[in-house]
Image (cartoon, rainbow over all chains, first blue to last red; front, side, top):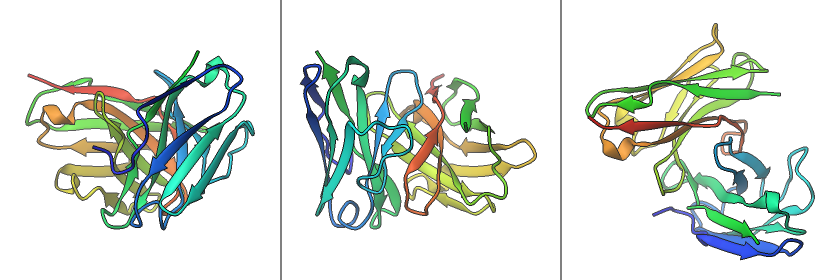
Length: 110
Length: 120
């Protein structure tokens, strides 16, 4: 069982908006930056959001991140079929002294 | 563009040592203030951070794996390596190498991953 909690799966239609939640505690999300990763099958995971809400160069502004207390959210607008992937949140956990990740959310665009 | 590529045996016998190498291209491991990481994902499960090595050679390990893990770096080959001893079936996973900058920051580059199966 993962330290950070994400919904296992979500689905939405092309063009719609979806939000993926990531719930943690004061030992992780509550006191550290959250990052989000997109993982398509047989490819390297890709950093989508860092420091809660910043996008690396090349990541479209359809992707956004936010954090409040011990939870974080990834938002994706204007869904495209190419957004079908697994999405993971991650952060440092000061109690466990390790990085922790969510279990992943499988996004289906149908 | 920085690229990371894992290599190593895809099958390891129980009780033996798993050894993987990550080759970095498009940038240098040495002299840059980055941490180089190993992360794994067992089938059907989430991601688990294994450990990091700083460019200076300092290492940091997941406490749950610390007794079995060794991460080293070979700057002459622009590679870093993972050794995990006394493996069992629970060590079967896709192993990724990655990089992060800030001590508690994000992983900005990842390899594609390599599946390692522990089985006799």
